[in-house]
Image (tube, rainbow, N blue to C red; front, side, top):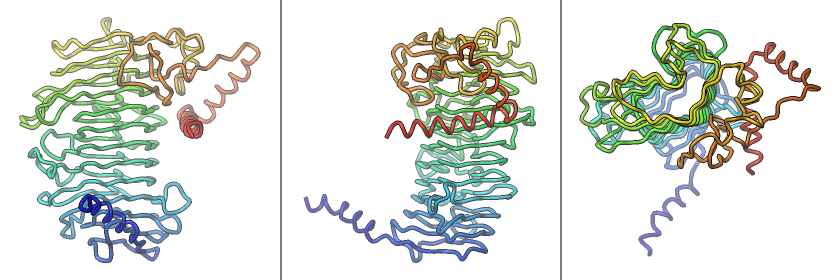
Length: 480
């Protein structure tokens, strides 16, 4: 009994004896490349001010916060101590929660990579247990760069580039990618990565916001929006990934690209299941819902990677144009070794590239026969008012919608886009009956027109963003 209590007593001792250690004087460069003066559980507090950059290495089991106000950086960070003899970096939280401002860490006007996460390739046990939260990036290059110093994966945890880490409550205004990592099957792999509640406005890429080889990812409740036309001609997705996991409850408006262009892959011999559900993507200039592929030709002969299965359930796409006259189908399927399931998805007002393009699926797989059922397509004249209450914002169901209860029950999906419970049978699309909207009666048509004018004045994407934040806030209030 006494032996069993020792770990608990140690944890209690460390927490009750944790310190807040101040660093910085409001100017210059922040540097902390050792645990000198720090203990397990301590908080490193950076004094409010404007700094030219930061370097953090050989740290573990601490939290780093802003202190006394905003901490602004006009130069980049290096995390891991790549340039200063770093050998380890794990269980570190970077949180801008040290003052009343929600985003306590601000990175402004930085060209190139803002936060480089790099250990030397021979460093063990690698980089893991990191959490980045409540940070804002304004007019910068790539926010989090994990592309360099790619370790060749040998089947052990120590050779992941990063593992068991999260990026959450990040806001990006006119930046390049949120996360950039290597999308290779044998090097630079990321494992057990969460990306959620991030807001990306006007991403300055060809449409890619998150890229990399991510295994066992959980990506959800993010908002991406873009006004205007993004440049580029590449075949991409907002999430450009190799790996497996869950991609759900994300909202994307404008710009270009699929929701995801995913090479489905599993680590080791066990076939994994990937779930893509409850996502909404509207008003893109090119490509459809999801691009799925994944067979031996995509794995570069890696002995540690095999194929996987994918389930594409209850997503909504609409108002898509086709700058290159390529299909806007919900699913574009390329050679794929695993099973594919496409159910309960909604599309409206998308481009038909050829007579056999039914807006639901274009199958270029050369033999894979996915399970396809209970998906719907409408043009804009068919859908507004009778099927959906709106087609420009969050695509809520009209009160008498034919989509209500028209889906097939899926046991792993219990809620909809706004976390309302899904009934059995569920509705088709990302929204369900918890979010019904009645259309305005004739006497209220002026109000409806005023709302339309409001969208013209402020832009539908901006208005969508405001309403999304309101929905999430009201949902949280109602749950307490």
